[in-house]
Image: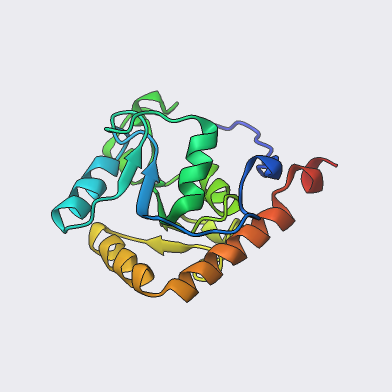
Length: 185
């Protein structure tokens, strides 16, 4: 679009910093870690609250506030369901002119891999090419709307074995394909 040559590199992580290999006994039903003032996040979280779900929320603009990296990893590890949003975070800083179309842009963020590396189950807002990183339905789950998010949360809270299998598969994929030693070493 801007006639700029781009070279894409995969993200790689120091997997020692995550807890995915440790035993899990999740005591948080649903969580989100991030800035709730970005994109459509507040609307989704408010909708869940109106429907009787009250996710544990951490980050800028939340009652729990910003947390350290270690606390963030701990939350992902301890949560049955970790929410992730892919809508463009800050359209005003986008290099292109701000327009309403930018609100529909979905973008890759490292949390898509960090949550599974922490051993957590990832329920992410859909984005094109997600299957390049994780297999939907096998290594993560997706939602397409507020109503779909609500249905998926209820479903996965009732299906522990399926949820934990998907989380385990996501962790194994992360360790296999996104450990910095496989990409840099």
